[in-house]
Length: 166
Image (cartoon, rainbow, N blue to C red; front, side, top):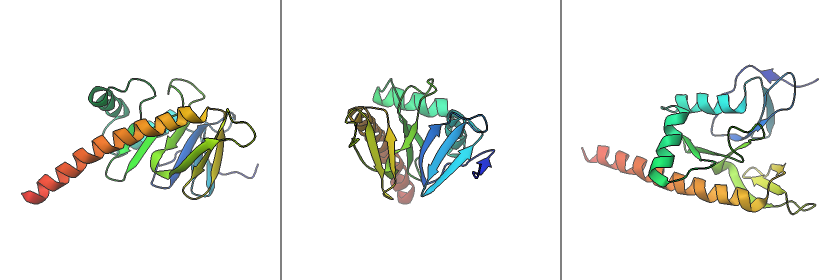
């Protein structure tokens, strides 16, 4: 095996997606730029760790989105608002098949050319990912995440503007 396996991974502005791994040696496959990184931690642990690094825990961020925007299922997570890192799950995060996609890295979501019931995600760097999920479901998640980004981004902008006025 010619792969590098890491104990941990720090989500950053180049992270495209975190996928569950079906491998004995690692639990996550991280797509970052043109690289594929194999990580021993589960995808959910990587998301939780990134939330803490961004200033609050995963459950707090999830509850804030749920309360303020009335989103109950497959809740998008503002991992780090200052760095514009928002992520959304493809399934319930409790399901093993849940993939995490990073909103600002997605260029478009289209039906897969060979199977229109599956999705082809094209990232802004032109890298592609094929998923066995209906394209309309992923587009719906994109809209929800855009709503979260707009709402929470406006709060951040207002906070910065009020500090400048002081």
